[in-house]
Structure formats: structure tokens, C-alpha cells
Length: 460
Image (cartoon, helix red, strand yellow):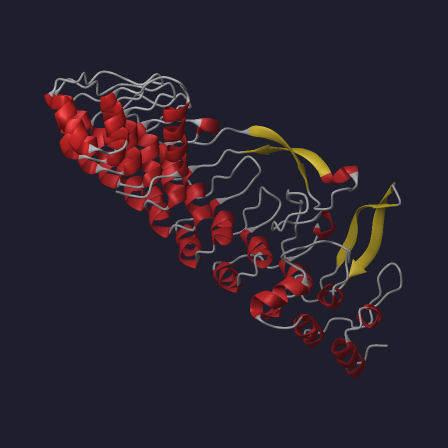
């Protein structure tokens, strides 16, 4: 029997604690404590199998929870109510589905258990079985008439839950029984920020549409290749996008499965599709995913597409996101700003323009006054040394964090990025709107090795 989820434990605690001060029927108590000898003796003495605790919990509920098939059969033979429901809507079949118990599920269904009876929250036995992952239990429920397209909170379906958990065999079963591969989660409006600072310019706060995720998007975000393959075979649209504009390909990049990204591209995913304002290639640079960069370039991704919109983030979080100050940047410029020299080389070899500049402009505040910071044009080298909204908390892009991830010191990583930029022919003496050059910035940050390299390369 699979490990029970926290949800089940919470429910069962509620089952025993909601009604205080009431005596629990001996048969129910024996089942709860798994005292099978006492329970058998009570049955021989003619105990009423229909008796329930005040919250609706019967002996059959607890026997199903403990997955004792023999005792369950005895209770059913003694006229136990197979569709008994607690105050929360829990049935013995729901518990068997949560357990992933094939034998108990079959026994209860053969005894007349109704697979459509759901929790008050709407979660049916099929939903919980899809989450727990036993494909045989799922097939038993579907064969008994369970609705494969039932939806619960925010219109999530069993297929979405199975895909998100990576239960490919469950996905296959649901698709076989008619689950809608094009179903979408509820679209809702959400107030978000695009900057992590607690106090920031009002321009960083906005309403966006969220939701609209398909089962394939759930599989892609989980990085589950087998589930994605089953969904594509079942007719999933590889170019569908969420309410915010995220595509399965972008989610596959974040999911970190290179084979899944390849599968989507071979199935027809548009390599430069960017309704969210960024392409899969932007996302690959954001995550420091060199293999994804290689895959996308091999499929014809445009290395010079610019970032068009920021993405939401949580306050003071370590989320991966695109800040407003990065709008207008190409994947190569982003790779330089994020201290990703290996990705920089790959993009340049793939045709990215090393002479690209990004006009860094973004909402800012100083001593309570809001204004638009105009830092001017920043070259690839300036991005590599760390210029362009210096106080920006780019948790995935700071040289400190990236250096820890790859086991290198901060300045060494910045130095290598600068070397790539200079080797590519970038103007080493370009200055921003304040008159600052890459060399000036490196001196201010006390990057001694970077300063030496730039001066040796002709910086003045």
C-alpha cells in the first residue's frame, strides 16, 4: 500500500475529532485501531455494520483505510453500507483509491460502490487515484463509469493531476477513456509584481490573466517525457499557450528535460512562439540551460529575438523571472548579464549578433520619489561585467549565485564572460548615459582580474 498523503491523514484526523464527547461504536473503534480479533468477535456477536460515528465514519471506512481485504469482505457480507459518506464526503472507495489498492477498489465496486461520489471539495475517487498513480485502480474506476473529465478547484482534471505527477500509465488510461487533452484550468485575474523589492515603483504592479493550462503544460512543467508523449499521441496541441502566454516548450525548458523539449519540437512546437513576451530560448538562458540552448538553436531558434515583456515574481523571492529593465535584451545579452559564458559562446556560434546593445531603462525610486532611470545603451561587455540596473536582485543571474552553482568564484565567472565579449569584437570603451565604461565599473567593484584583462585589451 502506497504511503498515504497528508490530505488523507488530515481527513482521517477530522473524522475522529469532529464530534467530541460521543462514544464511538465498538465495531468502528476496533476497525480504527486495526484490532481485527475484536472486530471479528463483534461480527460473530451480530454487531450492526451500519453503525457510524457522529461524523459518518463507519467500520468499512477504517478497514478500507487499513486495506484489509478479508475484513472488508466480511463487513460487506454483513450488510455494511459501501457508499457510506462522512461529513466531508469521504467514502470507503475514495480511501481505497487514495491507497492505490487494486483489490479493495475491485471489492467495493463489485459490491456496488458508486465511483461518482466525491468529497465535498469535489475530489472524486478517480481524481485521487490519478494523483496517487495506480493505473489499474484508475482503469477499474473508469470501467465502472467514473467521469474522466470531472473537474475540481480551478477546473483541474484527473488528466492534469496525473501528468503533473508523472504518472504516464494513468495518463494513457485516461486518454483511452476519453479524457479531454485540450481541457484548460480556470482563467483568473491576478495582481502581481515584476520586481522583488518590497517597496518599488507602481509600474511594477499589474493585473494579469493567469491559468488556462492544458494537461500537456502540466507534463512539460514536471519534465515528464512519457506523459507528454502520451498526451501528444492523444492529440494535445503543442503550440497552445496559457492565459499569460506560456507554451509547453517554455515550460519544458523550466522543467529541465532536454528529451521532452526535443519531443515537442519534433512534434511541431514553434521554436520562436512568444505570446508571453519571451521565447523558449530566452527561458533557456534564464535557467542557465546550455543543452536547451543547443537544442533550440539546432531547430532554428532566432538568437536575436528581443525580450518584450517582464514576467511576474514573488516579493523577496528566489524566483526566476524577467525584470522590466531587461526588456529589449536578446538571449546573448541576457547570457552576458547572467554570467553564462558557455551559453554566450554557443549563441555566438549560432549566429547571435555580438554587437547588440540594450537601452537600459526602467521605473525606479529614490527617497520616495518615482522616476524612470535612463542608463543608456549597454553593450555585451557592459552586461558581462554587471552593468545595467546594478541593484537588480536577479537571483538566478547574480554572479554570486551562478558561481556557487558551477563551483567557481564570482570574479572568475565574470572575467570569462568579459573575455567572450571582447573576443567577439565588442567595443571595449563604450560608455553608458552616465559616462561609465565597463572598465570604470570593474574598478568600482574591485574586480582586479577583470580590470587587468580589460586594460591589457585596450580599455581606457
